[in-house]
Length: 115
Image (cartoon, rainbow, N blue to C red; front, side, top):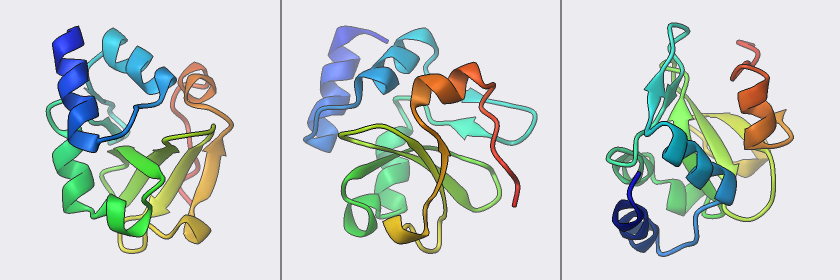
């Protein structure tokens, strides 16, 4: 990801993006796994967050992907953790923590329980 693309993305969100997420975008700008897990590309992430109304229901979080089954993967703008939540709720109280950090989750192979 080019610096200009990154600056444009930061401007769209009007928020500093988490550093570990920026590192991920620099390594791979989005991905789709056989399991159905999708990590949004820089071209799709703003639209997905707008469509899901993340700013309204979970304003301190960034939806970075989904499981292709109605659940979103979110990380906090400030702080650590990776969370899974039903797209019909997006309430932080309903979020399930699936990893202590984005980097840890990547090292663990992007695994999460299907329950």
